[in-house]
Amino acid sequence: MQKQFLFVVFFFCLSSHFSFAIGDDSTYHRYNPLWTNYFHPRFPDYIHSIDTSIDKFHEYDMLQQHFGWMNLGNNGTPAFQTIYHSMNNSELQWGLEQSVSPYLKSPENIRFYKTLKPYSHLYYVMGSKSEQQLVGTHTQNIGRNANVGFEFIRQGVPGFYQRQRADVFDLDVFADVRSKNQRYEISPYVIMNKLNWQLNGGITNADVFIDTTLIDKTLADIYLSNTRAEFRRNNYGFYQSFNWGNHYITKLSDTSYQQQFNSSVRLFHQMDYSQSLYTYLDDSTDFHFYYPHEYYFNPDSTSDSTYYSLLRNEISIEWNEVKHKDSAETTERKFPFNIFVIHDLHQLPFAQKKYINELNAGFECHSWLRPFYFYVSASAGKSEISDLNYRAEAYVTWYGSLSPWQFFLNVRTDNHPPSWFQNSYYSNHFNWNFNFKNEGQTFAELGFYNSKNSAYGGIKYVVNENHIYFSANAQPAQHNGTLNGWVIYLKKNFRFGKIHVDNEIGINLVDENVFQLPVYAGKHLLYYENSLFKHALDFSSGIEVNYVSDYYAPSFNPATLTFYQQNLTLVHYYPVADFFVNMKIKSARIFLRIENLDQGLFEPGYFTVPSYPAADRSFKFGVSWMFWN
Image (cartoon, rainbow, N blue to C red; front, side, top):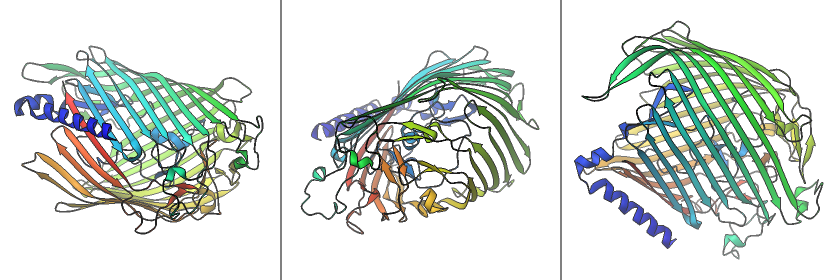
């Protein structure tokens, strides 16, 4: 811990030196967030500025940035959702990655940059029990029409108990190259995800929080004392597009101009090849944990592995808004739309055929009929091993001409095949081979958004047909019939001078026996925020409270990384309060955080799921530094 503290002190002193020593004029030329933006090639017109604020800067962990998720009590461990979510796609899926998806980089969530000067960002976090996290970004232009860079996340969390260590390493390398006339663009990328865990089967002592003889939590007895698992997923691919439209000139400075391109018709193509691998090792013979099937192949040890690969090609033609010849302003097309075709080539484990073909096609269309905005989409497809899948969505929004209010109605229905993992799996402890029917999901959602008051919310009526879930025997099962329910969500931020109250809640009114979700999940922040010393220091400090209502939380199966149904243990929670301080001094941002501050006030501790205790009170410290060279 002393070495880590000295490293952080050196890091902060170095950042302070470069931020202040050169002087105001030179500092400006080394720190200007307006120099750098990021985008995604799928939506090139949506340009985002990098975040330099201290708003929720203390939420450093990847799972904390996704509301409605909970882990096994240790950062970086497999996680489950506490808010009902509808499926986002109707294609055939592998399915084994569901509990680790928040930790994975993918082609859809990586960033591509545009920057006037080389941009770098480092973000270091350290905490109790030698927890460490390092996030880094570097990107720079090569000439006016090319950009290259990389981003990475490295996280190591030993945990409070035996066999609880989690290691996360994600890396993406990207580039964006445009032709001189801006008509052609290609954006290649390489993504590597590697997640490692020392897993246990939970602790054996349900009174671990009140056992006075247990001086050190690492001495607590556990199930499965010699298990480990690894999940890998690599992506190799590119986006490319060719545009038809008009050119215009943008002034960059008094002596510099750049030719820009207004695209009215766009031919878009993505090719992506992904490889996924999951391995599970257990050198012990504590196989009664896997009751009723202690083992299938080897009674002495377990060495399971399963793989999946996908080659995807997507082609679309987009008719965008017609744009003026000499500016970036748009003249609206009545019905901008695009049509697309997706071909997937799956390589699935345990399949009779080595490669499975799947073809999907669809369209999207939107239009402004003020004050209404309309959006319609539909797609359908089929693979060689599944029935027809389809998806249709209709969306309408009302915008007030001078009002910050927006109201929307969204209706969606889809029919998708079971994932391959739900249908087939073979390992030393769990074997199944099902032939489930397609699942159906339909919902109607009514909601609102207020840009002035930072508020949005809605109510969703959901209908699930033939829902697939993991039953009490830790294997998939299908509910034959229809399950109806309601989901309510709301986010509202209040401000009283320098005092802020931020709230985000979700209410699940669904069948608890099948979905096993809490009725209530909420996240609430009360904090003071101000700029001090003539805006030289941005400062915020307060309390963040997370709470879910008591419910029969699912049990965890380490062999398959799944959460399954249980109705024996009612898991009790209390409002978990974290104290935080966020600060910003020019290009340096710092946070201090005490997690589970109120441990012992309501209860001596709590379990996130049966047999998996949440982390004790702990301290976290983080520093971030952005610079342009």
